Length: 229
Figure 1: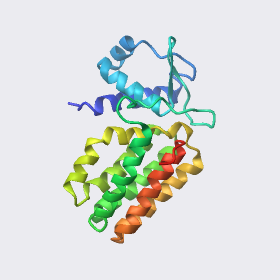
Figure 2: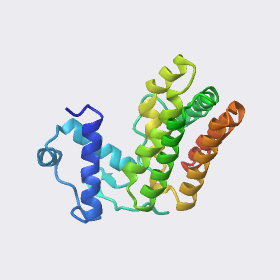
Figure 3: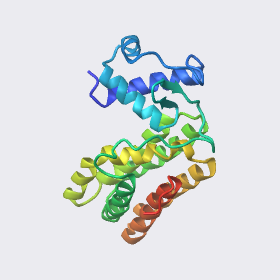
Figure 4: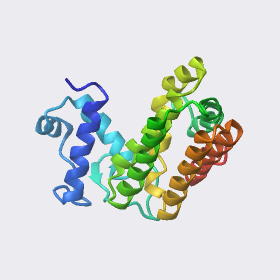
């Protein structure tokens, strides 16, 4: 049985495939949630989660009073980020600021602790990020990014920091999706290069460098989103 995370993600992938294939062309209004959930064989709650994910990635756009429409398949300079979905609890600035502190410390405490297989998985995830961006598989691009950061968190020597990371994982995930619609190819290439610098520091058992590279990476992602935490 699919878990609560996998169902919305599978639905999001199915809808992304419809957009990329032209079954749902740019500008088309998507079916009602009732009809679309029946068509996909999922609950309306799972469908709403999938639609929110695709809207954050810039593939869908909701217009008040009109409905949800297909925005397109490729980020461009004319795109804008979707509304921040956690605004009732934390600002996106707060989350990026927390990420810099938390993930920087996690990277420092993970240095020298990752196995060869984990480091290779991080290399593989970074390569998938690059390939998926080239193919505009935005869902898989972000999934690979999440895997990369999650592996580092799993190797952190501080159990409380590992728990804190998972507690705020939903908000962290959203900051990894949020800038995608306005991310230029050069920024994605820079982000991929930053991942490889983080891997190098972790492999070299260099805690200070791992912290610095991770903080720089998260800060640059925030700047892509128009923030300077």
